[in-house]
Amino acid sequence: MTETKVDKPGLLYGLGAYGIWGLVPLFWRLLDDASAGEILGMRMVWSLVFAAILSLIILPRDWFRRMATRRTLLLLAAASAVVSINWGTFIWATNHGHVTETALGYYINPIVSILFGVLLLRERLARWQWVAIAPAVAAVVVMTIEYGKLPWIALVLAFSFGSYGLIKNRVRAGAVQTLVIESGFMFLPAVVFLIILQARGTLTFGQLGLLHSLLLAAGGLVTLVPLLLFSAAATRIPLSVVGMLQYIAPTVMFLLGVLYFGEQMPAGRWIGFVMVWIALIILTIGMIMTLRRVRPVPAVGDVEEAPGVPGAS
Image (spheres, one colour):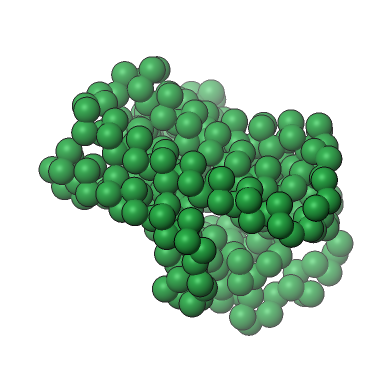
């Protein structure tokens, strides 16, 4: 077995990325005066602006020509559609008092990814992965009984981000490049939607003061900055460490929901969360044991995708 030294700056980058993603609900709450649709539209528009500027600085001039095959563009168009669903659901849930349920969605996302692997990619699961699925499924059943309906916010977030991860796994391109292209697909629909809001007199951008407008524009930075930190981390620390760091974001969301926003947690919800945590503990232990049997392969390039990036938040 080969020991892999964890790079301290890389670990800090990873903590920064997942910490920001976990704290994002605090940022979206600053925009309560805007509708979730306007926040989403502004995020799409400004993500393209900031990502395009960054691409001009750090990427070679011919990067688009080299990667823009028909297959890649179709996959990224699909990715932009599912991540839009993810972003919109997350923003709406955050601003309507469902922060703990967003945390549940990102906790069960690894289970959804495993199910996609079995059902769509015909992957064979290890015994410990099957064991982990059982408490996760039981958690959804318990939450359904507790809520009196399916925990749809958590399921939409988990399945949309699981779909996003599956598509991006087929692309295997850099974070900045894919963000530019995905945002490009989102840009025109977002602009049309914002124009409609303006025509209806419900657009708040430019209407509620400079600070409000700057915060709406900063949604693009909220997308870009943690993504860059994650990309820097993924090239410096083992992916096993990245996989464990991904639980920071939903844990921070959960603590914010319960301790800061004061969301109610009846006994049934606690039981559901405990079941999910048990499933994640099993997954983590199994992953560590598996990785110890193989020689770690260092990541290459500072904008490569890796598992666990929640472009959703």
